[in-house]
Image 1 (cartoon, rainbow, N blue to C red):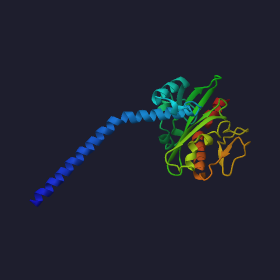
Image 2: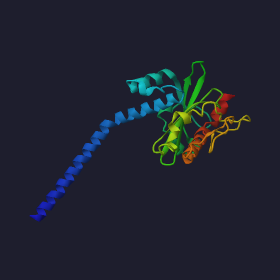
Image 3: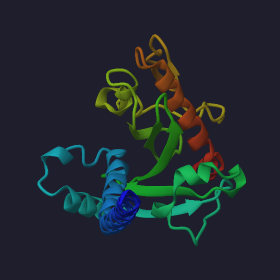
Image 4: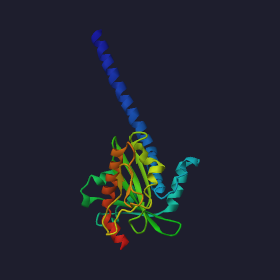
Length: 241
């Protein structure tokens, strides 16, 4: 009797585990399109916010429709290039996974570029960023004016940075330091933008204030910009000539 009971429990448990696993797999498969759509919307929103659009997203009734319409209206074109600045005609910029590209050899990377035309008819180039903060991934977008050196806008985000410290990278006050800063010096050397602990000189076009108490995340953001924007250096110089 005991043997029968143990066998019954084992079979019952096995069947239940299989049923639950099947159910979870089914649910995950059904939810996948919705998850992918959410990721798409968030990505489009970040691109828009890097040029100052959709800052009022919290006030709209239907976020998805608002973002889709704003993106289609304002992002006039997108394309991917290689590190030599050459067009990759067979690569769709929006579908490029930057994290995966950064894991490749530098010469094999596909680099996305998104273009916004401002109210004066000037083309603004939007570039993605991906890096690693103190506790997890950090990412964002930098937009550049037509001179390919002056920052037009910036948006940064994080997964797990410390609230009140490193997490401040996604606040308006921190991101507001970047517009007007330059990523090349007067001699044409790529400098990116440094973070300065204790406060940057307001007249320094290549530096911003580090976050007080969040130095590690600030430096990680600096390194992210240096690596990611550095991949585009040839493209920048070609476009500005």
